[in-house]
Length: 425
Image 1: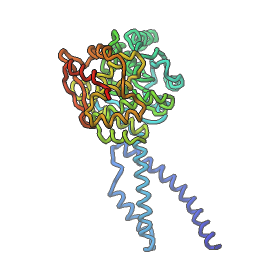
Image 2: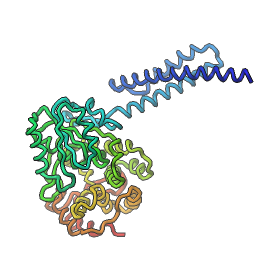
Image 3: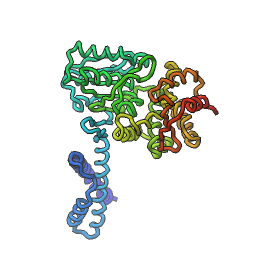
Image 4: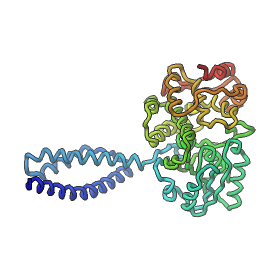
């Protein structure tokens, strides 16, 4: 027994030394990962692994142990590769490739606190937010700015107007902003739309950064460059395409969302999946995806679409799935329903029966509405003024199979019939 205890004590002491060496080794692995990221090198290097195994085997003179040491080394390298993948997945931003208008999309917990190193804030910064955004988010950002000017607007679609944009621009004018200064949105989609439009308009364009703090904005409106406001009660009738210089998406900001606000953001993720990625839709059905994976899955889809059709002349129209009827419902509901809830309702009648049979239980599981008993006449009135309508009808998005959205031209009569028959059992 004494020999057994002595051997165990020896192993424990060696394990303690190995733990220290392991930490040092992984620090070096982190440096390798950074170098590979900066130089566009792959994580797996077969020649390097063979070299390490051959050299390692020569260090062990006992033939009985050599094979086991080779396995030990291989396990070490497998752990190192996994660690590199995690590091690069954590740190590497998505990149919206639009030539001179390209920008990074950083998805990282805590990145709001890193804004000073991730964004150029060494200038006058107009921080646009609304009264529903936690003040701590704005204080965190303002503390990292050289000269912050905070403009807090009232939330709600009724305040998404030219008057509000004028108020933002007036604040910049009074603070002496120049074209070298910038605008940062901190809030949901409404704030992003307003701030982006103000940035596009002031002095014919200043830099714009977007820091969305709702899931709805994070999965969709934070990227792509669409900005705008409502006019005469018609949604997003005035605006501009103005791409941000960078987007920071901090999942920690979602901790303050109510379950209902979180659910409305998931509606946009479902929209992306149904139109463009059947596997992503299946993963959403199965549930359990970390929010980072939901964000990346949805944003990769939108990024790919925008890169091919920045100005929405063709493919980007797919991203309007659920919005044709959804915008009508949103207007008719008069603020009783959130945007994402209206999108969820708008998707249901635009799906083939087999798709609808899968969509309805998913929406219910996410806490989203599947039926609406509101004023369809009022919804139709709003739809007839929608930007997607033409002289002869609508460019509407349908999904006949998950992952395969398509744009079809439908007449006013056909769309009205779809609306009249929507949400029936």
